[in-house]
Amino acid sequence: MCVILNMLSIHENYSLKAYNTFGVEAKARYFTTIKGMEELNELLQTNIFKTQKHLVLGGGSNILFTGNFDGLVIHNELKGIELTKFNDEEYILTAASGEIWHEVVMFALKNNLGGLENLSLIPGTVGASPIQNIGAYGVEIKDVFYALQMIELATGKLSTLHKDECEFGYRDSFFKKAGKNKYFILNVSYRLSTKPVLNTSYGAIEAELSKMNVKTNINSISQAVVNIRSSKLPNPKDLGNAGSFFKNPTISLEQYQQLKNDFPDLPGYPVNEHTIKTAAGYLIEKCHLKGFRLGNVGIHEKQALVIVNYGQASGKEIFDLSALVIAKVKQTFGIELEREVNIL
Ligand code: FAD
Ligand code: EPU
Image (cartoon, rainbow, N blue to C red; front, side, top):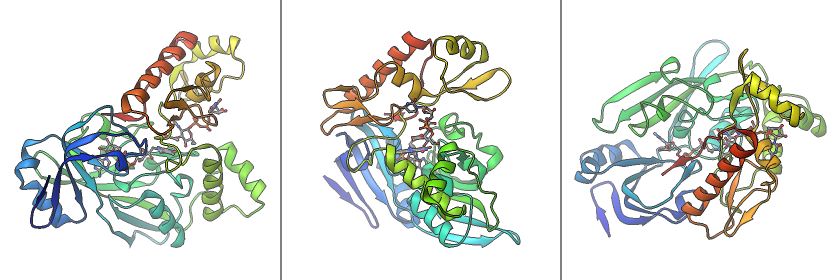
């Protein structure tokens, strides 16, 4: 069934299969797509909006539906990008939250603005970029984040959040804690530079740039990142996945040193004097799970952090495999992996 209002349509019992990159089947009790502020304002007045729980959905590339969603899914397609001059070298790029992230990165490059190039080819939308403080190849969104505008779903109240209010951490922010599922982010602003400090600290980028034999600039860094990512991360169009299923864990220096006795090549990146971040992909691989397949689901053969759907998997099968991985890593290393993907 479909309720047609003035500006928008609300569907009932709507399939979310095409709206999550795992490609799992799940139904939303109610589903609507928002393309402009008038539609959003109309939605806020409806009885369905006022009585149902909400899920704001971007590209569905960091979500696992383990069952139907008994509420209203608001699929975000708000569009628009604008640039304003900040000072002699910097611009503020403001993008509507339904813009596709990689297209915004390309827009910045075309305008000769640096800051987003290391984050090329991350799937999903602008609105999700602050949720887990997206990061890759030595850069996180917090490094260029300026502000965002959002409405509170319970009240419709509009507000602006600046960087220091977002509580950004590794794959973490205010929106994964006290602000979880409470706001609709409308747009996000990033502070970009015409004279950026280039970040090639991630070893794989340097190696790829020398292979490409080009000058290091924002365009070549972006291309290097695209090349590296394409060589190991599965394209959700070919194989359902949501990128890294787990976060890289932080352990004590003491535990790290103990583990090094048995696993001398265990990767470690100091967080502070007492703690070290290690690589979940390494731990999973050492448990002989890389390339492991269980019916419809498996661990990607080129990246052990990625769980894949071979076509017909249910959300529950994917979740169960993630529980098996957590148990095996805990048993082997005494480390409890945490899921990065949002489980619904
Ligand atoms: P969705 O999956 O739709 O939503 C994710 C969460 O954000 C949900 O809780 C949702 O409610 C919330 N949300 C979305 N939009 C809004 C909004 N407008 N307002 C309020 N809440 C909102 N992530 C990285 O950090 N680094 C990577 O390198 C990376 N690589 C990936 C590679 C692959 C192949 C894939 C499939 C995923 C990868 N990811 C990576 C994860 C994912 O791309 C990011 O988390 C991305 O930001 C999710 O965007 P989305 O629009 O698909 O969000
Ligand atoms: N590793 C293995 N086996 C594997 C995968 C990785 O041993 O199967 C080891 C590598 O040898 C390396 C270390 O783990 O020593 C790190 O590997 P990599 O550089 O591939 O990065 P990652 O830790 O696996 C993280 C992010 C990715 C991000 C890349 C690049 C998390 C959870 N994942 O992966 O983000 O793209 O770094 O910066 O932090 C995502 O969040 O969805 C995501 C894809």
